Amino acid sequence: MSELRELYQEVILDHNKNPRNFKKLDEHSHHANGHNPLCGDKLELFLEVEDDIIKEISFVGSGCAISTSSASLMTQFLKGKSIEDTKQYFEYFHDLVTGKQLSDDELEHLGKLAVFAGVQEFPARVKCASLSWHTLMNALDSTEQTAATE
Amino acid sequence: MFDVQKIRKDFPILQHEVQGKPLVYVDSAASTQKPQAVIDSISELYSKHYANIHRGVYYLSQKSTALYESSRETVKNFINARDAKEIVFVRGTTEGVNLVASSFLEPLLEVDDEILISEMEHHSNIIPWQLLAERKGAKLRIIPLLENGDLDLAKLPELLTSKTMIVAVTQMSNSLGTINDIATIIEQAHDKDIPVLIDGAQSIAHMPIDVQELDCDFFVFSGHKIYGPSGIGALYAKAEILESMVPYQGGGDMILNVSFEKTEYNEIPYKFEAGTPNISGAIGMAVALDYVSEIGISNIDRYEQDLLSYAVEQFGQIEGLRFIGTAALKGSIISFVLDGIHPHDVGTIMDMEGVSVRTGHHCTQPVMEFYNIPATTRISLAFYNTKAEIDQIAASIKKVKELMG
Ligand SMILES: Cc1ncc(COP(=O)(O)O)c(C=O)c1O
Image 1 (cartoon, rainbow over the protein chains, first blue to last red):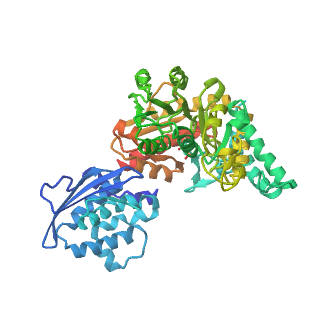
Image 2 (cartoon, rainbow over the protein chains, first blue to last red):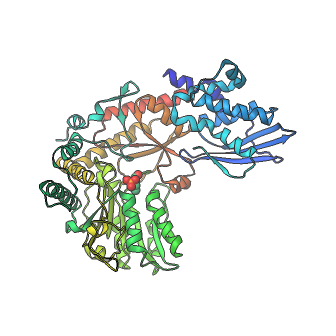
Image 3 (cartoon, each protein chain N blue to C red):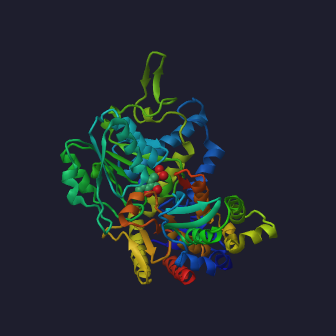
């Protein structure tokens, strides 16, 4: 049961029930769809980027608690961050959920996102946590394709 | 007498623990576990009798060939075909459908012809037809679902047109559990001289099958869904239809005479079995069918129906749980959704309680689309499951609700 509590922490449950930045952005510079065909998770991500800074970021879609809360926390976390830093955070986050060792410094960079460390114990759920991030990278590449988690 | 505790002892995997808890395996619609007899038959083959088949004049090859061919006889008897030559060994249901699409329908199909399937088909009984329809400019038409998970057979007369070249439907839905009235479908199709393929992937393990009584033209199933190995299955087709079909793959064993100018094909069913087949698979599958016959498929059916009623009663009491698929005639499959909780989260939490359930679209995305849900949690029961396990599952569903609040 303790691994489950690790996975489904209060923050995650809260963001699942009340996802933040859950809306479409009429004005946006970047946009992408993400889809996890295995479990049917779907999300649509919107970004307004100005001078290489994420001014606005939002999402809509439907998915499991892990994917919804991951998208919600990601949008909260990235608002105001630079594109360059964002790419670095993607790497850290990916390492975190796939169970690679992160330095204390790197962990600190991830802030609240560290709650997803519990995912590494559940290999089948890594894709759920990383769907929004893969979609983000696609949006930034501005390819209007649907991101598929590998 | 049906003694489930005795049966459970036949399945070594059921003695194991998962996540520190006794395994509750309720994903038998995806694949069934294997009895010791099947496991032993494969090891025995390789330890004592193995050689390639249909080739050598030496003892081992003769022995191996005899075992392989008697497996065909076992399949024939299990589904009551007229003749063993009507049984083609294939990789499974998927290959069986593909074989019929390529070797039977493709040469006959013309532009604007129609292939009739249903809204509840598994992807493996959709895509082979879709691919063929695209190649030939033909159309795929669909028997629609009703809200309770039955097919809307009232629409059948208008869907069976002068353009319909085949009807391909499942006897039992893998995501809803619905048992279809295939007798009616076959009768109406035959009235208009349209051949019918029955996908028996799910039904084979749960009810007696008599292809002569059904009078279906094709029947396909997979060994791994009836307690046998994976990578093996059977296609039944009426002999006169098999005779008329073109070969599927080319290779060894499917020929009588080969020269660079012309090849004379082997007789049925060998014409459709190119290359060295899954010898141990066929033998293992036959042992599985014998195992099921010994217990009695009707006894299995009765026991599973009793389990199903009990499970519906228990799960029905859980607040916020909605069944997907409530047809009157169902096999032992229960799909459900929980209010506000995604099936993927349900599956992870139940797994930690030792319960192996399937969550997702179950390779039936059109069914999910119909109910406007992304996925379901599916509990599929076999004759090795118990009421105590159902209690344990109900408790684990309650735990999901507790944890996800
Ligand atoms: C109704 C139905 N048809 C076809 C299949 C495909 O069977 P296989 O993957 O063994 O070829 C399945 C298996 O999930 C099924 O449930």
